[in-house]
Structures are given as C-alpha cells and as structure tokens.
Image (cartoon, rainbow, N blue to C red; front, top):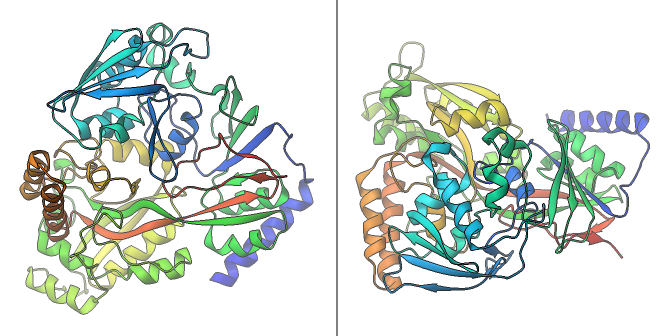
Length: 517
C-alpha cells in the first residue's frame, strides 16, 4: 500500500509538472495551501482552526498568545481585576481604527463581545461556543473611550488566554450589515483586509497596516494532499498544511522545500453521542454504558495507527489534556483485544452466531486532519475485530460534517480533533463546561466531572486546584466519553523561498514570515 501511494504521488507530480510551468509567487505575495475552505468570516461564527487562522490576520484582539505560550498585549495596554475576580477592566491603545477608517474605541470592544454572546444572533463559533462558557462571560460595557469592563459569572484562571481569541470589530460597520453580509464581507480591525473569497478556490488578503511583511497573502484551497505537495515542490505555494506522511521524503528531497515536523496539541478522538438524536439506532443502548465504552478502549492499537498511518511514534493519550499538564497517575489504555472481548462479554454483549455483538456507525471527516479517512477506517476495523461491527461513513468537512457536529448530531460515534494548548490544563478541559455547552459535542453528562468544576472554582491555592483537576481527569478516564487516540503531529511543508517557523498550537501566524536571505 505504501509503495502504491508513493507511486501514485510520483505519477501525480509528473502530470503536474507536465502541465504547469514553475512560477514563484511575486516577492510581495505569500501563498498558503490549506486542506479546507473557510465556512464564514463573521468574527463571532468561526470555529475551525483553518478558518480562525485566516481571520486572525483580518481582526485584532485584546491580547495575543505567542508561540511559547506567553500571553502579550495586542490592542490592550493593561488590565485591572476586581477583588472578587469577576470583573476585568482593560485599557486599549489610542488611535486604533478598523479597515474602513472608523475609530475603534472601548465601545467597539464591548460591542464585539456582546454581539458574539447575543442569543438572537444564534452564533455557534469559537467565542460564543467555547471561550465564553469557559469563563462564564456575562456582559461587556465601555467605561470611557479607552477602558472597557468585562463581567464574568465566576472567577477564572484562564481569562486572558480566552479573551485573547475574541476578534474585535467596529460597531457602526457591523450594525449596518445583515448576518449574511457579515459572514462574507468582513470589515476588519487587523493588519489585513479580505479582498476576494472564491469559495472552494482561494481567499485573498491585502495588507492595510503593520504588523506584517507581505503586502498580499493568498490562501489557496487544495483538498488533495498530493496536489498540495506537488504545488509546493513546483514553487507555486510557500506553505502547505497537513502534509501526508508518505510525501515527506519527496518534499525534503525536492531542493525547493522542506517539511517542518511539530508535536501538535490537537486531541484526536472518537466521541460518543449521548443525545436522544440516535434513540432507537443500532448500538446506541450499548455505548451508553461506561463498562462497554471502557472495553472498546482496549480494542484500539493506537501506537500502530500512529506508526503506520501517520509515520510517527506516539504514546496514546490518557485524557483530554496535553502533557505536561495531564494527570500523571493515569496510564494510556493498552491494546488488549482479549481484554476488550472479556469486558464486552461481562457487559452482556456476547458475539452472535455471525460473530457480531452489536453494530455502530462511525462518522468522520475526509481531509480535515492528518490522514483522517484512513485513521477512521482503521478504527472501524479494530472495533469490528472484537465483534463491534462498525460502519464508517466519511464526509466532506466544511459543508457537511461541520454543521453536523456543531448541532451535536454527528454519530453515534464521531471522529473529531479538538485544538489544545500548553499554557493551562483548564483550557483543554474547558471543551466540556456544561452538559449542553457548544463544544460538548456528544452532550456527555457525568456528575463527577461537572462537580469538579465547583471544586476548581473554590480552590484557594494552586495545589487545591491541581487536586481538583486530577480528580476530574480521573472521572473522564473512567467514564470514557471518548475513545482516546493521540495528540496529532503537524507536518508543514515550507518553501525555501521564505523564512517561517511552525507553531505547536496550530496557529498559523504569518506576520513575521519573510523572504529568505
């Protein structure tokens, strides 16, 4: 299979060269090849990392998370916290503007937060769906032109990191727009503006102010990994994401580009859907039992999936938190199909005459994550091998799979990747803050987990907080709402025409990218 894929790539590359003359981008233009298109440019309604990576060049934020995990001022210059920890007052820089020339003041900052949180708008993006529930955001109000107060429902230790991802925009511009207009014609506050968006083809940004080296950034949508690699080797793009493992050697040997290999923070997992949407479907009663879910953990040979399909050696994840912030007492579930069979028998699900215990469907995206389709197929086979007959349904990411999982309607098993961080375990855990939170995609509802949040909030010392966190991670491990897989490695192809360094957290920060000397 490996030789077939490599041969297929070689043929594709040869055909590519036969029909395309090598043409480097203009010296003032940077071209990035992405695997998936954006779904929206409304600052409150984006949630995929590719989409957010483009948008962070269009919109500014109060603070920024740097590559080393530090959090530094961007639009803000300082902040004060109330004694009870529930109010943050931020001072912003004078002289800020949006791309249309409108002055950006504290009123616009408050509007950006409140607009995203307004239930009338029905937003499900990163801010309203994940960031705000994580800090229990209540409201924002301007104090004067340069100071804005953000009110929370509880004290939180991750406020700066969360608000650093809220996109700021100008009130007057957005009050004139419909939601459809805001989704396709953003008025930015950052270094670049959106010039054109040819759906499924390319997105073009032009620089309006510093920071930023290149005058133009073009994001080309290239779903096929082999085509992205061919375009990179030919010199037609400068950076590509999600390099296929079997194409790394060809890129490294091309003389025109090289692959940067980064241990990423994205958690790849198979989730279970506990909603009533699948009531009466095959296997749904079985997977609602924790002992069945734990049994299924033993059916998966995750290190082999990593080595054979992703071409890297991994240790299976033991939870949803990135090392070194995870619970050190928890060990990854080992691959032990005999144990899986024994536990499934004990749970009352013995093999029938046809060898099947029960049937399930696994839905998964194609082309969003590293070799995701083959990973899903391998998981389906491992589960089928222990008698859990698994039908794998592969789906297009942006227009089909994204709305499905956002609506908590993917499943009853679904493959997904959730972005993570190294600056706080609570950031990784904030994916599941309430049973109905937007990012609790299967609506898992374990009382031990949710009581743990009260203990975290009540902690008076870092040691008490850590004890509460470890207890929550143990509850997650035991109840197994996810089939735990791995933290995805990230392979970026980078042209030797430019100088740029990939980050662990999947943020594609292009402000400092420049032509190589």
